[in-house]
Length: 130
Image 1 (cartoon, rainbow, N blue to C red):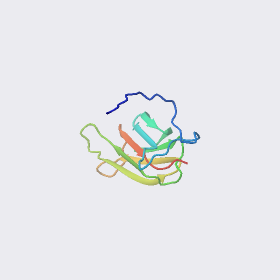
Image 2: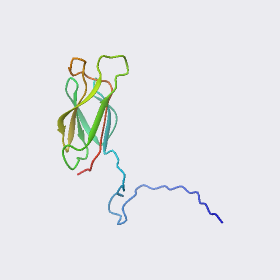
Image 3: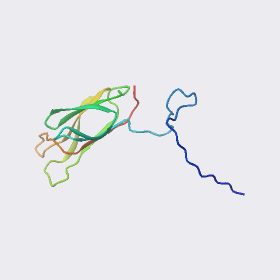
């Protein structure tokens, strides 16, 4: 005899067994920060855990976290996309500024190595929050 139950689970909060904190991920990881950013207009298209941005120089952007990571140099990755034919290949240059509270990226370079702004820069960060 086989029994099946179809149901819908509607909740506002999922907490740990003690009811005092979030549920821990087991053998999983989740992005703790992401952003889709327009460097030409200093506009955020979408984000998670980003409190503000700054356009520091041509092709250099800093993203400040709402909730800090627990250490500097937390694993991060970034990319840029040029949607038209362009001599500006996407690249991510780690400027050693992946700090607990922010990260600075340089996502696009010209073929001569010069920095350039991009319409589409994306980034995500993994790691533990403070």
